Amino acid sequence: MIPSTFTVFCQQADQLGTVHIDSVEAPDLESAILAGREQCLADWNGDNSGSEAPYSLEDIHCLGVAAGDVRILHWEDQAD
Image (tube, rainbow, N blue to C red; front, side, top):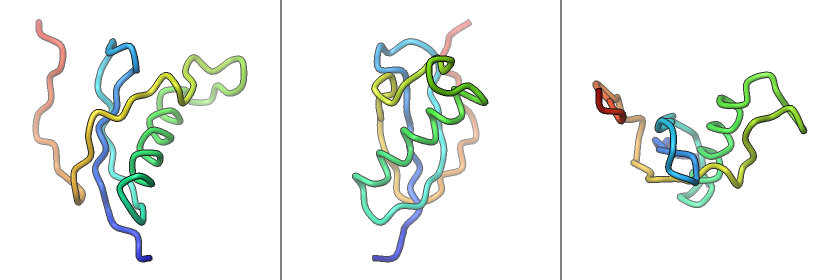
């Protein structure tokens, strides 16, 4: 199956913190969800791994998935 582009929206499973938005290539929706969660995990953990990593995959919830590479023009999930 040829991969498609999806835009995945993730947040901490406890609904705290900001929303992570990124585009991923995947063959189907379920694979896109996992790829989005994994990309969020990599971005949030940075160079930390193992016991040094602040997040695990279980800490990341997929809020939603959009078809294509969506161009976000403005996002403000925390009110002033």
